[in-house]
Image (cartoon, rainbow, N blue to C red; front, side, top):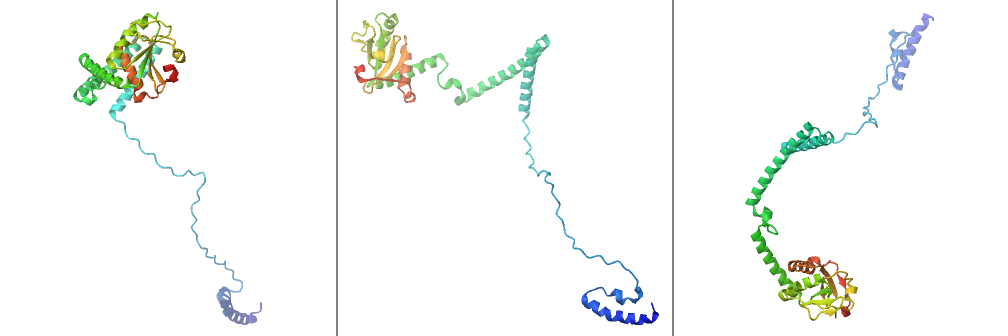
Length: 285
């Protein structure tokens, strides 16, 4: 290149610099004469905005699960009981499967300890019951003392007799018998006394047409025994004539106490669902 042309190039560079500034380009290449015509410079890196990238969650990452609540510690008495129970089961199993003298002795000794603990508990339970009437089983329901039991049965019989007397206003007892039945003859006096004492009428019905002492007005069976399917005598039924409802009380020889108890139960409101045999009014005549 001719050196004479350098001033011209410098002038052209000076004229191009303002245009470069106007176009937003880098003017240093033309304006910095000291770099020279063939000077090469790496371009400045472009400024890039740094963005925060959220952490990537892998789908296989398990979700956080709630921590299990700590279990309350067992009381030492419960721990000791469970240990003793397990020991008894194990020693018994070993003694059964291998009944050597040592194994059986070990189980019997351990069982004796358990029985001793149970006996101590029973003694303490009795002491608590004696000091607390509402927890004493001997004072609840049927007494166990002979004298108290006698009083209890007298009161119970009086109450039941009163209820049966009220029941006798619209109920009767059917007594099915046979003239040749010794059990019927043995049972007849009890029913006769029951009728006189408690005020409920006993209607005697002869299945075979035979007589029965104490019941001179006994009726001959007119088909009611067949209707009720009476296959065994003596038999007693509780009947309500105006409704035709008949309920079995029992078969065989019964005591007065048994009659009282059974009639009271089947006639109470609690036993309204007891099985009964409806029949027609004609059969009850």
